[in-house]
Length: 470
Image 1 (cartoon, rainbow, N blue to C red):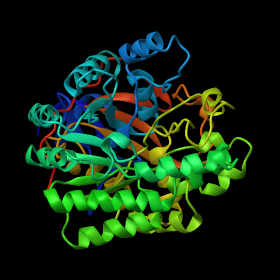
Image 2: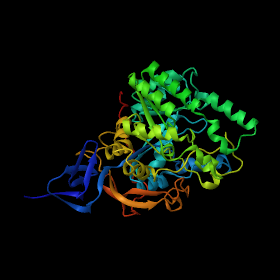
Image 3: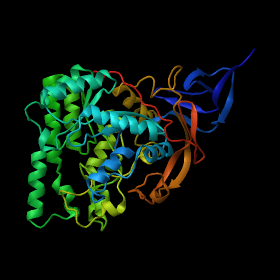
Image 4: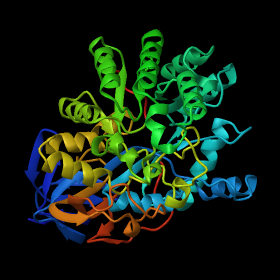
């Protein structure tokens, strides 16, 4: 009997998707999975014996600055105001190193620039720089009729998401026009991503801390309280209830905020929840350290009880996705002594460590199952962001995006040796078990035993379908 011949065959691995596990060979042709099991040969073959074959990771929340925007920022501020350290190329290298093959980038408009123009700029930058596949989240620029029409047009073009910041006074909860924009997004099939911290509470608390002599970075968690997060989550839930539009709470950090989302979901509201690694692995005790500023993210690190609640939320399905919110700064920029609780630079590098840390602290430690790991890092994001089954699946017709995972390899985190230009990791020195040995993007091996063979411009934009109903 003749054997079918494919571009790539992955042999002897254990395929893992939620609710299903089998040892079978995978044949990939023209970038897509063409056969699972059975007789086959390949122009190229990889022996995955002893490895777990997982869907390529999807990090739906990253901040990468394309070269054109970086140049624009440097010209505007004459180099005096730093920006995030990674572009689509170095961000791709970090993603690949951690088993991620698709990223969702937040696209911010410059002053006077429309969302459409900002998306076009990032699309051009990513086409030239990215080595992983990508999609974009336009960040809302206004609350008028023109912006509502723009949201609808972008969604029709395959950009089916919108990001709003309740932490901004321009888009604070209750601002006239906000509900109308969220309603327009839902009607266009777009998922509204919401940063949940109340703008008024942040401004008031920050000023009070500075005026009382407590403006140093060590007090950053006091400047952005759980109450500020819960107040904004309540507002986001209210938007979902009033408009019927799907809401996705980004980087949820506290037990109280998670409980509010759980109750909204139990009431049938289309509310989805993302958390990020910082809140699973670290607590606010880090702000007692001399270099506390390197741990700054918004919302800030919380208490151990919040950390425990988030792990339980992952295990029981109350949290849909884990995303890095990769927003890398150099340590020099993070530790700038001129910064205070209101100007601290938010964000850390976490693309390369997202999946290994979750596997080590979650699967290996017994907090979550392997099926839950795959759901949180790939399947659920693919479904929520209109990518499934092209992404997030190991099935005939799906893209050949695979992470061949060594569940036993242990490495010490050393951010200085990782791909991000940040040059450090908040987890430096942690022993982490479970790393990708091979990464395959659309049928092309891009990582093999630590050697990355990807090239700039090999990534592709992924057109998305509409957001789902709960």
